[in-house]
Image 1: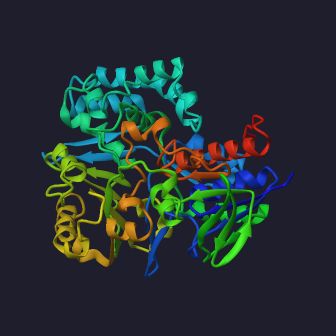
Image 2: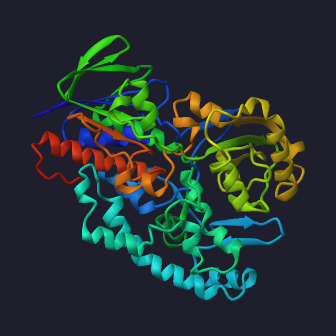
Image 3: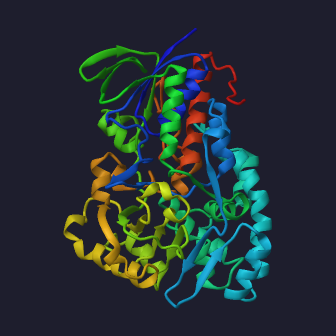
Length: 491
C-alpha cells in the first residue's frame, strides 16, 4: 500500500532518501526551507567564478557510484577524474611529502622524504586492507537502531582488531616512527571534524582508503552532484517544496500523525529529519526525544578567492602544516581558542577544470580548522584571516594578494546561523562514544514513525557516508512499513 512520507530538509541525505523511498513506490514530499537544495554541498559564486563551498575531496568512489546507480542515476551522469598524485603535504621545516595511488611511486617518495619508513607503510596498507573490508561490512553497511545488533561477539572481535579503543595518533606509532609521517596519516580525521589525538583508530581507515580507492574530482565541482540529483527527483515524481519550513508535529501516542508546514497541517505516514541532528531536534521542538549532551565537530574558517591568474605549479589539494600540529589540535578541541599557528588546506581546482573561472583566471579555497561554538566572534578576528593569507602567499602561492579579484570568508558563526550544531562543520565529532552504536541512529528514539539522516547520524560524515545513512534509513523505514519484513535496497 502506498504511503505518504515527508522529508524535512533537502540536503544530500534528504535527496537520496527521497529517491530510495520513491523507488519503493511511495509518495514522497521533500520540504526545504531555502531556494536551493543540497545543504552543505553548494557553490560560492561571484563575478563569473564558482568554487565548492563545502566538501571538495571525493572519496569512496565505489560507494558513491553504487548508491547513485541504485536510485537510478547512471555513471555517465558523473564526470569523475581520478587524481594522482593525491595531494602534497608541506611542513614548516621545508619538507614536502606527496601521496600517490601507485604503490611503487609511494615507496620511492617515502624513501626520499622519510628513509627507513617504507616497511611500516607496507605493513600499514596490508593490515588495513582486511580491516577496511571487515569494518565496512560490520559497521558502515548496518544500522544499530536496535542496539543489541551492535554488541555481538563478531563485532567486538572486529573492534579489537581495528584497535577502536586507541586513538588514531597512538595507533599509527606501530607503523611510523617519524612524527611528521604520523601526522600525514592522522590529519584525515579532520575531514569529518575529528581530533586525531582523540578520535578512534577506526578513522585510520580514511588515510588507507585514499591510497587504496583513490581521490577523485567531480568535473564542475562536487556541488554539481546536486543538479544531477534534482533532475532525478523531478523525473521520478518526488514532490519538492522549496521555501517551506516544518514547524512542529502533532502526535497520537508515540506516532507523529501531522506536520505543520508554513501554518498548514499535513497528514503523513512517516517523517524523515534531514538536518544537523541535535540542532534540528531543537528547532522542531523534539529535543526531549534525545537528551544526550553531544560534542560538535571542529569548526572551519574558509576563505574563498577569485584570482586573475592560475597557479599551474600548485597541486589541486595541499596541506600546509604548522610547527606543532598537536598544539593546533589542542586549541581547536580543548582550549577552544583562536589558533596561533594553524595547519591549513588549499583547494586549487582550476588547473584541471577551467569551467570554474574566466579564461586565464582561477578559484582558490583555503580551509583552517578552528574551534566550533559561538564564543569566538569571528567578525572581530580580521587579523586572523589576514595573517593566514600572508602565510598562504609565503608558503605556496607567491604574489597572491596582487592576484585577488574577490574574497569571501565563512566562519563557525555563519555555520551556526545556518543550523549547524554549535557551528561544527561536519556534524557530531567522531569520537569513540559518538561513533557506531553511540551515534544517533536512523530511527528517532521513542517515536514510532520518525527517522533521521545526515552527517550527525550513523555511520557519520562525508558525502558518500551520508548517502549510506540515507540508504540505511530507507531500508529501516521500508521494513517498518512492510510489517518488519526484510528490505534490501540494491540493484
